[in-house]
Image (cartoon, rainbow, N blue to C red; front, side, top):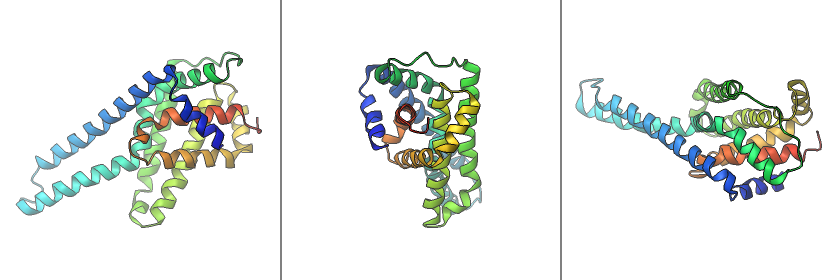
Amino acid sequence: MITALFRAFDNLGDRGLRRFIWYSVGGAIAILVLLWVLVTLLLTQSAITAIPWLDTAIDVLGGVAVLVLSWLLFPGVVGLVSGVLLEGVAKAVEARDYPDLPPPREQGWGEIIRTTAKFAGVLVFANLIVLPLYLIPVVNIVVFYTLNGYLLGREYFELVALRRLDEKSAIEMRRRGRLRWFTAGLVIAFLMTIPVLNLIMPIIATAFLVHLFQNSGTR
């Protein structure tokens, strides 16, 4: 697994991946900045209590809350932005490191968009459901990494596996190697919490899972 992760980082130097990196970074930053600006404007233009000092405090706390929520929901946001690009990332990694593979199963834009929307939607919705637990010290860390580790490991595995296997075979492979894919998801979830690196984590995660899949003993 460590070797697969290092190979994924090494793939970032590939010319074929650079445009995906810039698209991912630019899109993620644009959406998060827009979200923060809109909520900040909404708070600052609204007199909630008509008490100046209290309204100012609410504005400040609201801005902080938006930043915290952005951090918690970042995996889903950045996944939504770059999800439609990840098929191209997988192709670029395979072309460079596994040139003898047969052509993958063709996926139409409709399927890619549906998969991306489901992926991002589940991540965001699940994190919103457990949001109260994020207010409890220690518990918040355990819940965040366990939940997102499971979801990210599953979704990135499916992204890669369904290019090469039918749905039934992919599900069976995931079940046989569930600990492997969950551990990979934990690694991805942790790296997604590192500032700056999290902007390109969908690219790294896709390359990481391509390498794990191609070198998996469970296949």
